[in-house]
Amino acid sequence: MRILLSNDDGVHAKGIEVLYKALTQIAQVTVVAPDRNCSGASNSLTLLNPLRATVLDNGFISVNGTPTDCVHLGVNQLMDELPDLVVAGINNGANLGDDTLYSGTVAAASEGRHLGLPAIAVSLCSKQENHYETAAQVTLDIIKQLRSHPLPKDQIININVPNVALTELKGIKVCRLGARHKAETMTKQQDPWGRDIFWYGNLGSESDAGEGTDFHAINHGYAAITPLKVDMTAHESLEAMSNWLSEV
Image 1: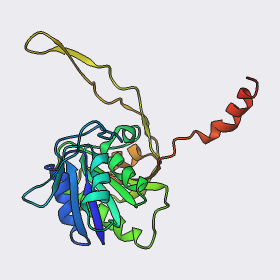
Image 2: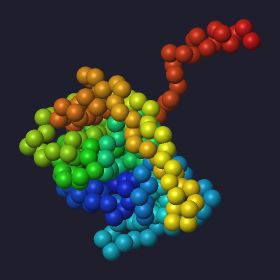
Image 3: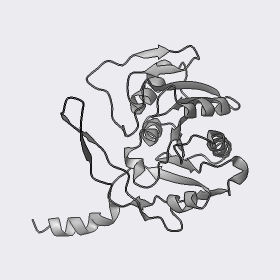
Protein backbone atom coordinates (compact mmCIF):
# COMPACT_ATOMS: atom_id res chain seq x y z
CA MET A 1 0.00 0.00 0.00
CA ARG A 2 1.28 3.48 -0.90
CA ILE A 3 0.22 6.55 1.05
CA LEU A 4 0.84 10.22 0.29
CA LEU A 5 0.97 12.11 3.60
CA SER A 6 0.64 15.88 3.87
CA ASN A 7 -0.62 18.52 6.33
CA ASP A 8 -1.14 22.25 6.80
CA ASP A 9 1.00 22.77 9.93
CA GLY A 10 4.20 22.37 7.95
CA VAL A 11 6.75 19.68 7.20
CA HIS A 12 8.44 20.08 10.59
CA ALA A 13 5.24 19.71 12.67
CA LYS A 14 5.07 17.06 15.37
CA GLY A 15 1.72 15.73 14.15
CA ILE A 16 2.97 14.67 10.72
CA GLU A 17 6.01 13.00 12.26
CA VAL A 18 3.86 10.91 14.63
CA LEU A 19 1.42 9.96 11.88
CA TYR A 20 4.27 9.03 9.52
CA LYS A 21 5.71 6.60 12.07
CA ALA A 22 2.30 5.00 12.56
CA LEU A 23 1.47 4.70 8.86
CA THR A 24 4.80 3.07 8.01
CA GLN A 25 3.54 0.04 9.95
CA ILE A 26 1.07 -0.69 7.15
CA ALA A 27 2.28 1.19 4.07
CA GLN A 28 5.03 2.81 2.08
CA VAL A 29 4.64 6.48 2.97
CA THR A 30 5.77 9.56 1.03
CA VAL A 31 5.61 12.87 2.91
CA VAL A 32 5.06 16.05 0.89
CA ALA A 33 4.19 19.03 3.09
CA PRO A 34 4.43 22.84 3.17
CA ASP A 35 7.71 24.41 4.24
CA ARG A 36 5.81 26.54 6.79
CA ASN A 37 2.55 26.65 8.70
CA CYS A 38 -0.35 27.08 6.25
CA SER A 39 -3.28 26.82 8.67
CA GLY A 40 -6.42 28.34 7.18
CA ALA A 41 -5.13 28.02 3.61
CA SER A 42 -8.23 26.08 2.53
CA ASN A 43 -8.05 24.91 -1.10
CA SER A 44 -5.79 27.72 -2.31
CA LEU A 45 -3.30 27.08 -5.12
CA THR A 46 0.00 28.81 -5.86
CA LEU A 47 -0.47 30.08 -9.41
CA LEU A 48 1.81 33.13 -9.71
CA ASN A 49 5.08 31.68 -8.36
CA PRO A 50 7.02 28.50 -9.18
CA LEU A 51 6.87 25.60 -6.74
CA ARG A 52 10.08 24.07 -5.41
CA ALA A 53 10.41 20.69 -3.72
CA THR A 54 13.31 20.06 -1.32
CA VAL A 55 14.14 16.65 0.14
CA LEU A 56 15.04 16.99 3.83
CA ASP A 57 17.50 14.85 5.79
CA ASN A 58 14.65 12.67 7.12
CA GLY A 59 13.33 12.00 3.62
CA PHE A 60 10.31 14.30 3.93
CA ILE A 61 9.73 16.60 0.95
CA SER A 62 9.27 20.29 1.73
CA VAL A 63 7.34 22.47 -0.74
CA ASN A 64 7.06 26.27 -0.83
CA GLY A 65 3.34 26.04 -1.43
CA THR A 66 -0.03 25.28 0.13
CA PRO A 67 -1.37 21.91 1.32
CA THR A 68 -3.33 21.63 -1.94
CA ASP A 69 -0.15 22.31 -3.91
CA CYS A 70 1.66 19.60 -1.96
CA VAL A 71 -0.90 16.90 -2.75
CA HIS A 72 -1.17 17.93 -6.39
CA LEU A 73 2.62 17.99 -6.80
CA GLY A 74 3.08 14.75 -4.89
CA VAL A 75 0.59 12.83 -7.01
CA ASN A 76 1.56 14.29 -10.38
CA GLN A 77 5.34 14.72 -10.11
CA LEU A 78 7.02 13.43 -6.98
CA MET A 79 5.77 9.86 -6.58
CA ASP A 80 6.89 7.14 -8.98
CA GLU A 81 3.52 5.41 -8.68
CA LEU A 82 0.09 6.73 -7.78
CA PRO A 83 -0.71 6.46 -4.07
CA ASP A 84 -3.52 4.23 -2.93
CA LEU A 85 -4.56 6.78 -0.32
CA VAL A 86 -3.99 10.43 0.59
CA VAL A 87 -3.81 11.26 4.31
CA ALA A 88 -3.60 14.78 5.77
CA GLY A 89 -2.60 15.51 9.37
CA ILE A 90 -2.34 15.16 12.22
CA ASN A 91 -3.54 18.74 12.55
CA ASN A 92 -2.66 20.74 15.65
CA GLY A 93 -6.21 21.69 16.65
CA ALA A 94 -9.74 20.68 15.76
CA ASN A 95 -11.37 20.84 12.34
CA LEU A 96 -15.02 20.67 13.39
CA GLY A 97 -18.19 22.19 11.94
CA ASP A 98 -17.54 25.38 9.98
CA ASP A 99 -13.78 25.00 10.48
CA THR A 100 -13.69 22.50 7.63
CA LEU A 101 -14.34 25.27 5.11
CA TYR A 102 -11.07 27.01 6.00
CA SER A 103 -8.96 24.00 6.92
CA GLY A 104 -5.82 23.33 4.93
CA THR A 105 -5.85 19.81 6.37
CA VAL A 106 -9.30 19.06 4.95
CA ALA A 107 -8.28 20.79 1.71
CA ALA A 108 -5.26 18.50 1.30
CA ALA A 109 -7.58 15.51 1.61
CA SER A 110 -10.16 16.95 -0.77
CA GLU A 111 -7.42 17.58 -3.35
CA GLY A 112 -6.60 13.91 -3.19
CA ARG A 113 -10.25 13.18 -3.92
CA HIS A 114 -10.23 15.68 -6.81
CA LEU A 115 -7.38 13.60 -8.24
CA GLY A 116 -9.45 10.44 -8.00
CA LEU A 117 -7.93 9.03 -4.82
CA PRO A 118 -9.52 8.06 -1.49
CA ALA A 119 -8.52 10.54 1.19
CA ILE A 120 -8.60 11.16 4.95
CA ALA A 121 -8.06 14.27 7.07
CA VAL A 122 -7.22 13.86 10.76
CA SER A 123 -6.98 16.41 13.58
CA LEU A 124 -6.19 16.41 17.30
CA CYS A 125 -8.69 18.61 19.13
CA SER A 126 -6.22 20.52 21.27
CA LYS A 127 -3.24 22.84 20.93
CA GLN A 128 -1.41 20.97 23.71
CA GLU A 129 -0.11 18.20 21.41
CA ASN A 130 -0.11 15.62 24.21
CA HIS A 131 -1.76 12.64 22.55
CA TYR A 132 -1.04 12.54 18.82
CA GLU A 133 -0.56 8.79 19.23
CA THR A 134 -4.29 8.42 19.95
CA ALA A 135 -5.22 10.18 16.72
CA ALA A 136 -2.66 8.10 14.82
CA GLN A 137 -4.12 4.84 16.12
CA VAL A 138 -7.68 5.86 15.24
CA THR A 139 -6.44 6.69 11.74
CA LEU A 140 -4.78 3.30 11.39
CA ASP A 141 -7.95 1.52 12.51
CA ILE A 142 -10.05 3.39 9.94
CA ILE A 143 -7.59 2.78 7.09
CA LYS A 144 -7.69 -0.94 7.81
CA GLN A 145 -11.50 -0.85 7.54
CA LEU A 146 -11.35 1.04 4.24
CA ARG A 147 -9.78 -1.99 2.60
CA SER A 148 -13.14 -3.78 2.78
CA HIS A 149 -15.37 -0.68 2.91
CA PRO A 150 -14.06 1.70 0.22
CA LEU A 151 -15.18 5.31 0.19
CA PRO A 152 -17.66 6.58 -2.40
CA LYS A 153 -15.82 8.46 -5.14
CA ASP A 154 -17.24 11.83 -4.10
CA GLN A 155 -16.37 11.65 -0.38
CA ILE A 156 -13.50 12.04 2.06
CA ILE A 157 -13.35 11.22 5.76
CA ASN A 158 -12.78 13.96 8.34
CA ILE A 159 -11.45 12.57 11.64
CA ASN A 160 -11.28 14.57 14.87
CA VAL A 161 -9.86 12.99 18.02
CA PRO A 162 -9.97 14.35 21.58
CA ASN A 163 -6.62 15.01 23.25
CA VAL A 164 -6.73 12.00 25.58
CA ALA A 165 -4.72 8.83 26.02
CA LEU A 166 -5.92 5.92 23.90
CA THR A 167 -7.10 4.09 27.04
CA GLU A 168 -9.33 7.08 27.88
CA LEU A 169 -10.95 7.34 24.43
CA LYS A 170 -14.61 6.32 24.80
CA GLY A 171 -14.95 5.14 21.22
CA ILE A 172 -15.74 6.39 17.75
CA LYS A 173 -18.93 8.09 16.54
CA VAL A 174 -19.99 8.87 12.99
CA CYS A 175 -21.33 12.43 13.03
CA ARG A 176 -22.58 15.31 10.96
CA LEU A 177 -20.86 18.68 11.07
CA GLY A 178 -21.96 21.07 13.79
CA ALA A 179 -21.76 24.85 13.54
CA ARG A 180 -20.34 27.87 15.34
CA HIS A 181 -21.62 31.33 16.16
CA LYS A 182 -20.09 34.26 14.29
CA ALA A 183 -16.39 34.63 15.04
CA GLU A 184 -15.11 37.55 17.11
CA THR A 185 -14.26 40.72 15.23
CA MET A 186 -10.70 41.48 14.21
CA THR A 187 -8.27 43.04 16.66
CA LYS A 188 -6.48 46.27 15.79
CA GLN A 189 -2.99 46.93 17.18
CA GLN A 190 0.09 48.94 16.29
CA ASP A 191 3.47 47.67 15.22
CA PRO A 192 6.69 49.15 16.75
CA TRP A 193 6.56 51.97 14.20
CA GLY A 194 3.01 52.97 15.11
CA ARG A 195 1.41 51.51 11.99
CA ASP A 196 -1.92 49.70 12.24
CA ILE A 197 -1.91 45.92 12.12
CA PHE A 198 -4.83 43.53 12.39
CA TRP A 199 -5.33 40.02 13.79
CA TYR A 200 -8.23 37.64 13.40
CA GLY A 201 -10.22 37.15 16.61
CA ASN A 202 -11.09 33.90 18.33
CA LEU A 203 -13.32 31.27 16.76
CA GLY A 204 -17.01 31.62 17.47
CA SER A 205 -18.57 29.51 20.21
CA GLU A 206 -20.58 26.41 19.36
CA SER A 207 -24.11 27.12 18.13
CA ASP A 208 -25.07 23.67 16.84
CA ALA A 209 -23.36 21.12 19.07
CA GLY A 210 -26.20 18.76 19.95
CA GLU A 211 -26.20 15.00 19.88
CA GLY A 212 -25.18 13.68 16.48
CA THR A 213 -22.71 16.50 15.74
CA ASP A 214 -18.94 16.30 15.68
CA PHE A 215 -18.78 18.87 18.49
CA HIS A 216 -20.95 16.69 20.72
CA ALA A 217 -18.82 13.60 20.12
CA ILE A 218 -15.57 15.38 20.97
CA ASN A 219 -17.06 17.07 24.03
CA HIS A 220 -18.06 13.67 25.36
CA GLY A 221 -14.73 11.94 24.80
CA TYR A 222 -15.35 10.22 21.45
CA ALA A 223 -13.48 10.47 18.17
CA ALA A 224 -15.72 12.14 15.58
CA ILE A 225 -15.80 10.70 12.06
CA THR A 226 -17.59 12.71 9.37
CA PRO A 227 -17.91 11.80 5.70
CA LEU A 228 -17.61 15.00 3.66
CA LYS A 229 -18.61 15.87 0.09
CA VAL A 230 -17.18 18.68 -1.99
CA ASP A 231 -20.49 19.39 -3.76
CA MET A 232 -21.69 22.69 -2.23
CA THR A 233 -24.95 22.82 -4.16
CA ALA A 234 -27.99 23.64 -2.00
CA HIS A 235 -30.07 20.91 -3.63
CA GLU A 236 -33.13 21.65 -1.48
CA SER A 237 -33.32 25.17 -3.01
CA LEU A 238 -33.09 24.24 -6.68
CA GLU A 239 -36.82 23.77 -7.29
CA ALA A 240 -37.93 26.89 -5.37
CA MET A 241 -35.33 29.06 -7.08
CA SER A 242 -36.32 27.73 -10.51
CA ASN A 243 -39.95 28.61 -9.74
CA TRP A 244 -39.34 32.24 -8.81
CA LEU A 245 -36.79 32.75 -11.58
CA SER A 246 -39.38 31.56 -14.11
CA GLU A 247 -41.15 34.88 -13.43
CA VAL A 248 -38.14 36.92 -14.57
